Structures are given as structure tokens and as C-alpha cells.
Image (tube, rainbow, N blue to C red; front, side, top):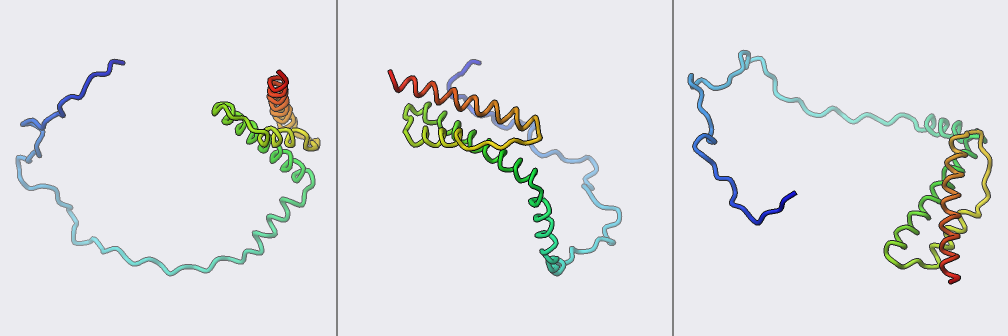
Amino acid sequence: MRITGPQRPNTAGAGNGPRKTASGSGFSLPDAEGVRSAGGAGAPRAIADVSSLLALQMVDTADPVQQRKGRMVRRGRRLLDALDGLKVALLDGQVDVGRLADLQAAVDEAREGTDDPTLEALLDAVELRARVELAKLQQAASR
């Protein structure tokens, strides 16, 4: 891509002005008399009882398999957040002990088994990445 210096703006030419129609009649609606004006907003309605929503939430969280799966998803997100923080610190050139401690704590957190093979594979990959990064940083610190 070639970059040039500042240029003059395009000026409006003779053909760029508003155009006039030959008939001069302009735009008109054929049935303009039947148009009504806009009405006001409707009255606000009361919110339905929230107890049904709360009951629905309780049903979702009552399943121990779903609870365990949710905990493992949150654990994976914590690991990813710690890895992302470590990446930013490495790019800044300032890896502090707190970030390493956070990552180590996230890796050392007890892992529960789930019946979802996709989730298990993702957690394995994230944990492996975290352990590799910790090992690299510990090896660099020992030099």
C-alpha cells in the first residue's frame, strides 16, 4: 500500500448538486387523508410473579451433575484468566509473584470428574498449558 502526503479534498462539481424533476410535482402519497397521528405509549404492565423464575433456577441448580459441570467450567475460566494475565505480564516484561501464585493456585485446585468428554478434553488442554507456562517460568527463574 502506498502512502502519499495530504491531498486536496474533492470539490463539488457541477453535476453534484440537487437534481430537479422534469414534472416539478415532487413526491406525494395517494391517500394522505387516511393517515393517523401516532398514539401515546401504552400503560406499563406489572411484572409477573418472580417466584416461578426462582423455582426454575432452583431446578437447574439442584442437579449435582450440572453443579459439578458448572464448577469445572468456572475452574477452566479461572485458569484461562490466569493464563491471560500472565501473557499480558510477559508482554509488559513484568511478571510478578502474585500472578504466578494465582496460576499455581488455579492449577492446584481440586478437579472433579464430569461425564462430558468435550469438557474434560478442554480442561486437560488448559491445565497442560498452565503447567507448561509455570514450568518455563520456574526454569527461567532458577537460571
